[in-house]
Length: 461
DNA sequence: AAAGGGAGCAACCGCACATCT
DNA sequence: AAGATGTGCGGTTGCTCCCTT
Image 1 (cartoon, rainbow, N blue to C red):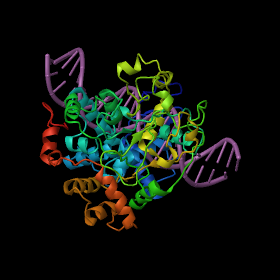
Image 2 (cartoon, rainbow, N blue to C red):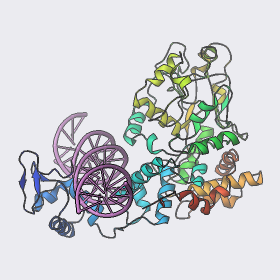
Image 3 (cartoon, helix red, strand yellow):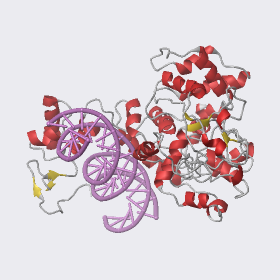
Image 4 (cartoon, rainbow, N blue to C red):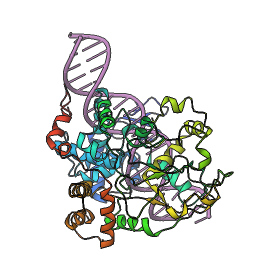
């Protein structure tokens, strides 16, 4: 594939040697080609890569030139294997932002997205083959419930596609089944959900976390923290606080959302309706709702496909034997729907309680709902650790974290204040009070070293 | 020494987005 | 507004090297 080998019609030899197909050479770059490209960039600067082929004898397409320059010829490129510190950064970043190689590369001077991607892919293969978790325990536990999984990624393009389809108040494909029973996503085994389903909602895939770790989580009833997804747009702390403010203030109406006969104007399947309480009681941040008429139709509250899409699976009892057409539909859904679920998990939705109080058996009372994405956006340059420090302090003291800790989190990377008000801080404190304390042992770098000590191989070869 | 297989790496491909015309 | 062009990104492929048998 890559080399072309001149097997295509019209192969010939170009000015610098090598095989040419369709007028463009493919395959490995020669030193002569590199020199030509370097000279061109020196003269004309980066960019306008398609002009390279026009203005030089280089028979390479613009994309190829850009890639060669960016990955190999550009100055200040760091070659050689990744240092332990770089590896650590990659792990942290991947746990936060997933397969965003280019964004990771911006945090690793001298490293290219391609390098990071190759590193990650080989690492993933190695660890999965060994049956080892991808992330070290401290990262694993810190981000429990919303770690990115190599096999659970959806392309950003699909996310965007989903957003463009459903993100502007367009009619959504199917109604949310709700229930008067409130389910806390923070409860390890919410009422009405099997343990398996619960775990599927909140923890990564088995190929990502070792079975032992999952068992550990089962046995110790680890509570999952509220979803705190990083934002792909890298919003500032100020933006985060704007989101927090909107938890209180905003209204976004979804008319006809629980209309009995309508499947055209509703929240997509699987989207949890979140009842946000101004004063957050510990451990009950989110509540799933299902209309009363659904309660008797299925032993399952709703088609729970809350985990990240792709490679996802439902328990056999759900996926194979459930007669609920919604669930069957869910099992046969397209990748787009899975992407939608991912999207909606990233952007947790809330419903103002005053709009979802079911007053009778009919669903017309749901006709007016307020739904607002509950997003806490953390850019890759803003370390989540500060936020988790805040959580720890809150839990440790059983009271509000200090203003210093809080301010640490809301400051931007330049250390400047982000226009955060006292009101914002209160919001943060309320949020942090809902998140369980992190084990210091799990954050011990020594544990990390131990974790990464793969038997037979020392992590990176 | 030769063959087989895995790891690492470089490069291509397809898609999406932004900008230009 | 629509098409063309340029650029960036993530996924994938296939070659080369090296180790093991």
